[in-house]
Amino acid sequence: MNNRILIVDDDEDILVASKLLLKRHFDEVVICNRPEQIPQLMAQAQPAFDVILLDMNFGPGESSCEQGFSWLRQILEIDPQAVVILITAHGAINLAVEAMKQGATDFVAKPWQNEKLLATVSAACQLRQTRMEATQLKQTNKALSAAIAGSEAHPMLGRSKALEKVKQIVSKAAATNANMLLLGENGTGKEMLARTIHANSLRADNVFMSIDLGAVPENLFESELFGHKKGAFTDAREDRVGKIQAANGGTLFLDEIGNLPLHLQTRLLTVLEQRKVVPLGSNEPIGVDIRLISATNLSVEKLQDEQYFRQDLLFRLNTVEITLPPLRERKEDIEEIAQHYLALFVRKYQKAGLKLSPESTATLLDYHWPGNVRELKHALERAVILSDTKHLNIQDFQLQKTLPDNHSSTMQEQDLNLERMEKQVIQQALRKHKYNISHAAKALGLTRAALYRRMEKHDL
Image 1 (cartoon, helix red, strand yellow):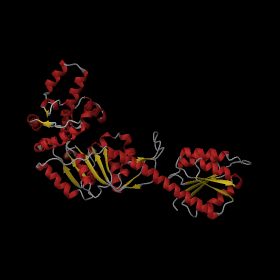
Image 2 (cartoon, rainbow, N blue to C red):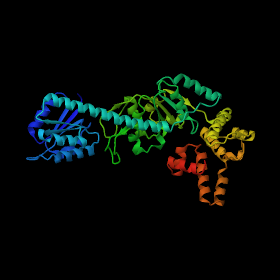
Image 3 (tube, rainbow, N blue to C red):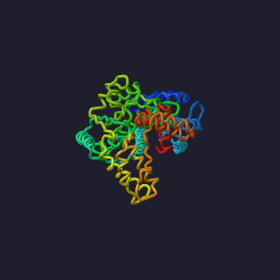
Image 4 (cartoon, helix red, strand yellow):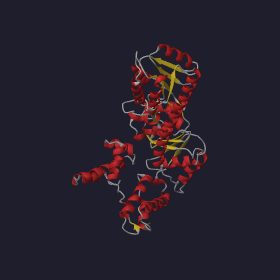
C-alpha cells in the first residue's frame, strides 16, 4: 500500500519490531524515539503521514499517559486531519478510550498480534484517505459554488452578419475539446460567448470556471490557479484547491490573458503541456482534465509579438480563434440587445410596462458605444432606475458626449469640484483607451478593482 507511517515510541525494541512488520506492507515507515521531534518530522513530511502510531508514556516509570494526551493535542493542532493510533499497555486501555474521545482514531495494546496491528493500521490509512477526499471535495464545492454564484446565462443576441459568422464557428467547435481564443474589445461579450460555448459542449453538465487574470495580483497567481498546501506561505492557514483543479472535468475560462506577464505565461504553458498542476508547498503533481477558453482585448499584432506574448503559448490557446466585432459594427443588433436588457431590468426593479420611446431608440442606434454591449447594458439599467414615466427618454440614459480635449481642459479649469473632476478624468481615460479597463486603470494609476469602484460611484 502506498502509505506513509510514523511510529513514536521510546522503546527501541517496539520501534524495530513494528518497522520490520509494517515496511513489508506500506510504502514508508519512519521511526522516532523522541516525541519532541514530532513537529519537525510532520513539517518535513511530503506528503504528510497517513498514520501516526503514538506511545502514551515516555521515560522510565511513566504510567499516567499525560504525555500521550499532550502530544495527541499537538499533533491535531498541526494537522487536524491526522489519524493517530495510540500504543498502550493493557492497564491503560481505559485512558486510551478517553484519548479516542479527544481525537485519536484507535489504539493497539502491547504486546500486539501482528495481524491485529496490520488490520488496525490498514483501516486507519483508509480513514485518512477518506478524510482527505472529503476535505478536497468540500474545497472544490466551495470553489464551484463561488463560480456558479457569479455566473449568468446569456443568449447570443443579434442577427447581424458579423454575429452570424461567430455563431457558425461556435456551432462547429463548441462540441469539441479544442482550446479556443476569443478576441475583441472590452465589453463585446467574450465571457458571455465563452459560457455559450461551454453550454453547447460535451462538458455542459460540469463546472464553468472563470478567472479574470487582470484582477489576480502576480504574487497570488500560482496560489489562485494552482492552489497551495497549508504553510506554503505566511497566510496559508489551510489547504486550498486552485481554480484549475476546481475546473477539472469542465471548462476553464481565462479572461484578460493578454495581461499575463511573460514569466507567468511560462508557468501556465507548463501546466497546459503536462495537464498537471503542482500546488504551492507540494511536490506531487495533480492531473487535470480541462477545456480551455481564453480571451483578450489585445490586437492580433500584439499577440504575435514575442515582447508581449509567448508564441508557443499562443499556439496552445488558439486552436480555434473567434473575433467578436464591436457593437458599432453591428448596429442592427442594438435594438434587440436593448429590448432584452430592458425586460431584464423591468423585472428586477418592478417597473412593469416601461418601454423605449422612438426618440430614445434612435439615440441608441446613433450612439458610438465605446464600451460596447457592457456599456449598453449599464445604460439600460441606469435608465430604468431613473425613469419616472412609462417610456424611457433620452435624458434617462445619460449617454456621454465625446468632447474635444481642449474643451475638457477648459471645463476642468472652470469647475474645481473634486467629484466632478474625478468623473471627467475617468471618462477621458476610458474614452482614450476605448474602454479597456486594464489600460485605463494603468493610465490613472489605479488597480482594475479601484477603477471599477469609481465607475460604479459615478454611474459610468
